[in-house]
Image (cartoon, rainbow, N blue to C red; front, side):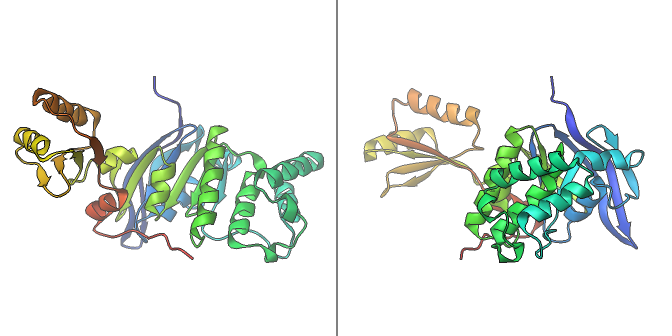
Length: 315
């Protein structure tokens, strides 16, 4: 039995003048999972988020968010979601606590409930020691954590994160990943747009690649990697005789006499690995080591879109 869907969209289209930003995309996201929408700049990622969060009306298609239709019940959608955009919504003239309480007032939470929720989020996001400091003194990572905490004041069922780690250093990015994983374990559904392929690989249950307004591929990270040729199983041997005996069984394998390895083409799947092991067993050869190598999401992204993706920078 399939899991209930948190987000379902069919045939979404959006044009600006003669420019087709979205060309009929379909999305189905089970509850309590992370869905990553990948794509180069201008692919339509932010437009998709704006439509699903009721900030922009589509020209065609339908979408249901947590059982609320974006056209018939936009207020119902807004009550069920939280949105963190590419740019922080934090008021840097206020303290962290004041920002959270301001969000509480905007959500019309009871005063006591708002204070308790703010305290809970300050602790959860490791901001308690800085709670009463002006936010202008915060690092980029702290500002992003506070921004996300503000989004969570209303306990949304679904969280839209539009490139939430853009501009963060690798350490702060990984801290944000840990927070996202924690939220999912608590039942939150996360819709993530990102240019960082490692981010999608680390977090997403399902990935869709968007290019020129169309979804050109979708699946789990492993499924997408198997779309690109170049995967192989590397077999390591302790002697030239074992290498030679194995090579007889794999006529198209690439042999490295110096390293005593044999690289056998593979899609990285279990069936492929089992077949290689069976052939080795039939040949009476046992490798010293075995490793599976598949293309990474960089390869997938480049193959499907013709673009390279954003690389993580170090500081």
